[in-house]
Amino acid sequence: MEKTEQKTKKLLATLIILTFLTVNLTFPSIISYASPTIKTEKSVYGGGETLNISGTATPNTDITIQLFDPAGRRKAIAQASVNSEGLWSKTNIYTFTREDLSGRWIVKVYDTVLEKWAETPFIVDVTPPKITITLKPEKKVYGNETVTILVDSNEKICKTTVTVIPPKTIPQTVNMLKVNQTRWVGTLKIKPEFEGKTTIKVQVEDKAGNIAEKEKSFIVDVTPPKITITEIPAKTKEPTIIVEGTVSEPIPEVKILVPGLPPVKAKVDKEKLIWKTEVTLKATGLNIVKAYVTDEAGNIGEDQKVVYYIGPIETIKTEIENLKETMKNEVETIKTSVNTLGNLLIVAVILSIIAATFSITAVIIIARRIVLK
Image (cartoon, rainbow, N blue to C red; front, side):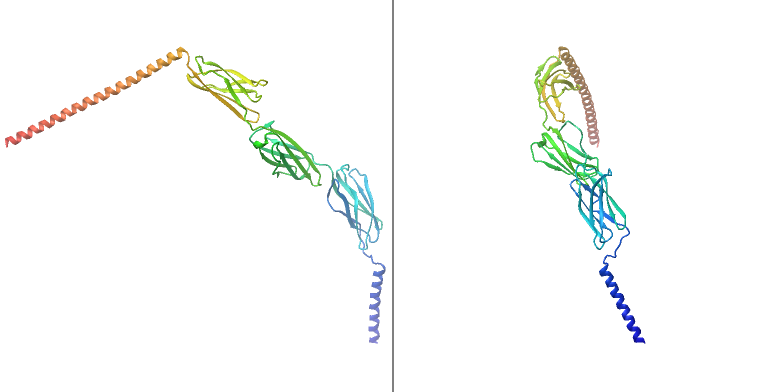
């Protein structure tokens, strides 16, 4: 009886195993999903990039794929086959171009067995960033100085390259630092070889790989302007004199410096590059008259001449009287010193006589004592 039961159990186990194997061979795709899924390779796509997707759905079926732009327009439709494990993928669904709308796109899949949709959003950015270049300080012409370069964008940028292209030397790259998502900053030390028109070329790239380029040019002048005093008297009896000269650049004005006076301005004839003005000398004798000029870049040029101012007769007389008074005071001082010295000599003589008298008296007293003894 026991042997019969054991045989029966073995037979049942064998039947169960055979049934399981038969079911797996006949229906290999027992795997099922509650709903389809979908995912993209990237979260942001740029111009020229292709959309490839993958996901899960009911095994051994076909799914429908649809792509919609931000305006809700269907841009692509495709099908994909699901394998026995419920996995599917589809490549080259759509290639984005500059003509496409930037923004939030949606890709959808439909499982015909489950009768359900799945969708996922992603960003398409085919619009290059808009950038501005700012130089600090803002000037028309730059000299020997350090300039700050600011690059600003209307969207997040992940890479910025700034190249300076001088007219007389090889281009150089400026080291740029990220201030925030939309601003980068760098500094440029202007060099003599930048003289002339120098160009700054900026290239930025956003997260989607869109590239924008922009250029900004500025003038560099590191050469000081030349100014020359051409007409000025070497000697004069009059305090007011005429000073004339030339400049090498069409600068608005020249400044003249005269000892004892504030700067005198002279307008420049921008066509002839000449200037002329009157100055009044205050001090007699040698006067150093300086003329200097500053250009737009801050470069300074200067020239100087010496004028001997004799002065009017009245001035000479006053100076003579002042000299006489000074000499008189000096004489009185000397007399006072001599008188003081004379008094001291008299006192010294009197003291010497008194001392001699005491000495003679002492000798007489001593002699008398000796005689008396």
